[in-house]
Length: 388
Ligand SMILES: *Cc1c(COP(=O)(O)O)cnc(C)c1O
Image (cartoon, rainbow, N blue to C red; front, side, top):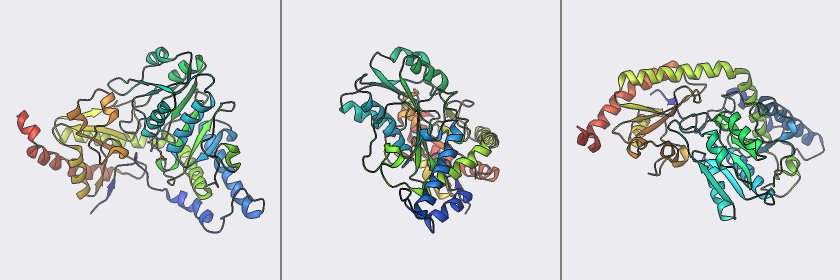
């Protein structure tokens, strides 16, 4: 049976060149980067080379990049780190209602620690309004955190406009760019970003490694205390092989970014056109144009997303409902809810996320497998029979 992986927003396969770059650091180059002997220096050099690659992609200085264990840690460090370091200025933060749980749960934690958080609404396609942000900023606001590309629906936020609103008011601006790094051009200067989170396993690198960009001069308190790693921002012996993998993955993305954008956009468009042709009553959640090129979130009226996922799984096709973190729970997606998608349509929403290794053959295969599944599920559905 053919295997088709359309869940690249949950995680991506490792790129073979990335594996090749990492292997020596799992075998012979095992030194601790803090050691001053040759083994240590070799590891240290590799880490600094990765730091330069990440900085090159984001247009910042290498000293403004700190390696972490991934997107979740970077988000936690940005939110809690800035909140705790700037308590003398104020205790108010602003975010959006469609953020990843790493941001939302950090905010919920901060609320138990005496901080106040404003959760901005989004419009029907999932966009935050800069005007809403301007109105929410207060004298005591210390941080605004708005993601770049949404992991569930792919909608892209007007980051430059939002950050200008924040920074004109003297407020730090953080963006979770875990889904957009390597897929969309990111320039922290042009986009006015003070802090940014990224993760290797969303861009064909290994799991358990990521980075945070912190603009020099930003006041931030570390989460981990221990050795002097990462210039005291992140204690703990560096994940050298992982960091090398992140650097290699970033390097490939930098080279391919335009071609890959076009490739994924074309692939997802041909999939969407095909679906519309073959299956009636489907609805795109999010924006058709203003989205991550590989992400399509589609509601199939009258069916449960879980049933679609399990049926596709039997055909060798991997897709998701809502975000990976909420699968297995019956909770409707907080993102679709914030966008005003009706609960029954939200429950029928399936996320197809394409990646570098998908082909037109994959698209054709799913376009053949899916229509009979939807037809069968609709015929069985009590909701649908009531409607008829
Ligand atoms: C995957 C993801 C994260 C979490 O990153 P990890 O490296 O898996 O911890 C954070 N934000 C967004 C938008 C994501 O898609």
